[in-house]
Length: 106
Image (cartoon, rainbow, N blue to C red; front, side):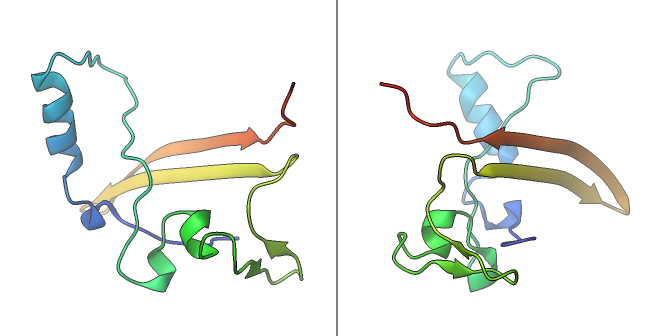
């Protein structure tokens, strides 16, 4: 189930500019490092970049096609992120990053 499609074209600072800022101030960067921008939101409802935005601060749960409602993440929920870059018909994939929300410990 895809909840949102966004693009780095919605970023105020390009990834190149973000990396330049990082390295210009002494931040380490090596070949193979994974760099992330954080949440990216576009200008339309279909391009909202977080569950916080999609649920209007948790006040309006999303009604999924299978009848479930999605609001804040709960214990046991699994989040899957997939990403890729595409240019001139060439696609380079990040693959999949997956994590499950565990119960808080005291």
